[in-house]
Length: 589
Image (cartoon, rainbow, N blue to C red; front, side, top):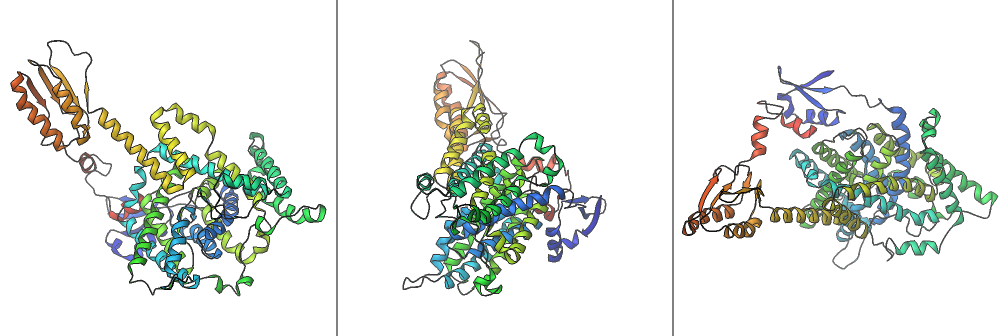
């Protein structure tokens, strides 16, 4: 059922745009009266699954929010603020049912460099009190730029990444999660942030940190990890899923409860205990001198400087790219195979970053770790993401002491299962079965991300994919029938796309045609022919006369390079002759 909301003429109103963004469903159009409608959507349709999933995501998100803030060189509470806004604001505005947003490790280096640059004076002295508020103004501006990108319909960029690269990204993140959580599982938490780059701030890397952790084992953490893993594996068994009560009480909740009990009981019953850096560490209002002191507000004193605008555009572009990649990956994990409207996602992320920057939070993106935890915990609608954000907001003010009793080894066990599901051996087998072309792109992306970081690894995987496309395009400029009989015309069927890279191969093929022959160059299936190639063929038709070669060209070079997508959208699309309203395009594509 659809309820009328506003007319076409009212779209120009900013208030109407705000109402459209706040809708929790899609827009449809009734052509007979040109009125836009919003479908009725209930965020409580799967509340029995969304609430437990939201709790699990909340438990996973809190240490990640703190860790990313630490890795970014920002106040710890800025990560908590970003987690709250990512859940409540972005979760409400987004068109994704199962995506979860928050501070992203992929931006940590950019954030740290920006704060350092903006907070350093001419004498080379750095001040966090100066640099961080100015950085927040860049976050706000970055959010505005993201909203502009959404209205410019830039969300389509995410679809230019090959599936093999996206699956490689998911597998690499799963491997990194497992490797980075091993030290936490062993009780070695000198670097508690779990930063997802290969190189760490203590000079170690992902693999050398494992050797360091082996020499610093806490038996209490190991016991909690092993028992927690046993519980999680048990909860995954089919017979457990058939028991109704265990469908409501999720395994990760039991694991966290066990961790809190272990923290309190181990010192009383044994000689084992947990160190402070082995626990979740949420800043409290009492430690900061009051609730308001937890928040920081932007300083606009450098708004007219080039450096601030460069940082703002960098945040907007990198955050948008990371979000679009995560949207594409999350949609592939979604059991219902929903497709997230990417332009609307950019609008939601932009609004979230504006609010986060205004009250002292880090930049926000959609995050694959939290999103995959949401999916694997049974989340079905955006209520789980909103609920997790609400839990962060409530808990940091009302229950910080309870949350600070959760050992990081409990959360490591939960993330082990998340990482395994992202990087299952069956996925590697599946990609190998698709042929070397797909497997090479997949493996290059996996290795590049593991040994560098998310964005650089994705870029390397994409470059390999492009190189393989160019090589294939270079190698196959035309087709030739093996059934060609002597005395019959030689038929050369040009490929759909013939670029300047094909010049050499086409010239060599034409030179190989013997004298006194007849050749047919068929361009009827071509969608694009580079002007250089057209010139080569036209020159050949003239020079061939000297060798008594008859050349026949099928197709018209003047009309071959038409925009077939534009023709399709205008003539054959589902909207027919009715142009889709601009606002609907932005919010639903």
